[in-house]
Length: 514
Image (cartoon, rainbow, N blue to C red; front, side, top):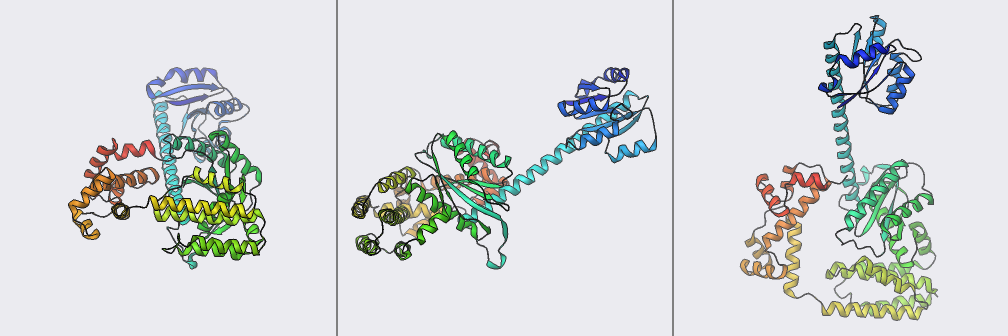
């Protein structure tokens, strides 16, 4: 139903217009009337009618000025002029103000109905244009979010000569100590909180992109010329604390302006958060971390970074000798306990990342919190050294006891190959040749270890990636179909519905990120 307001300084005209037409039959609801321009403007502001039938000559505010005032309110209201005068100047101004029609009294019912239908058509066009604009804006935002994410994760590079300046930006990485990210209700709870964060930033006219990566909330802020005060940081953390019932910690990067610095800023915020977790600090700025690093011999930190970056095959066996050298340097530099803890933190953090990547042993976010908390309670250099040696020894023993067998490694390699090549056709005979195994034996081995056949696993990987694309992009289903390894869209639809329980289109409408 469209809402109609009738404005005329003669009540008899208003009553006549109300009764002259079966408005409901034309999907019209009369929401009010007014006998002067000022009263009409108040009615428009309160009831926001879609269509206004308005006389030109009225007390306090004439009809043409009423249209002008309404346009200043940025409403989509359309106007039909009714007048006892046919002066050219009135008609010209009405056209300039984009009135739908100019009807001269006495008015025939057919004229009114015809004008109303034109008004409805105009409103429909306005609605369609707005929706089209919104879709374009949403698509552009989604593309920009994807582009920023690619830069953050190093999946897209920029040539130095093509460096593009942005508004000044920085990253906030937020950790939630003890939050069960793997819980099925976590996604819904996090999304509700992030929606409130987006509203807060929008209200303050701050541009941002928000992601959840590796059990952290990641926010890229556009500073647009000014630095944020602590009040914004506190408001964000208070909001998340209220929603999640968990005390959040945040790492904040330095401020940058060019695309190549997006990844750098993200890594700074990530590093700052890790240090904040270690030191049990609510807010950690990377610039403070830099000052801390420069306050003692940087050669110790560089030696640690270099040892783990090389990632030699004998890294674990060389750990004890390496730690002896590091702690000898600490003693020579007369590092106080706090700085010794930081050196130990760097070793622990590198070590955890190493075993996660090399051995597929995943240390949960909650586990890291406990490790850092235990380390932070130590007081002397000797206590720190003993604790670190025990931690490395226990972790190494665990790895040796749970080291993957040849067949387990083979399964890991097959999975890695599938994840890297799911977009292309994968044939069992080709897998047999690649891994030097009989295809039937390979299939049997995989099924026993994983609980799915190789082809069921390939389908699962393809459909998981298809679901991700349906949720996070505006690509057509036909394009997504090809991107995940299906040439035939009809077959893709059948496989998707069989495994997911719904069609790709319906899945997108139910799960698309707002």
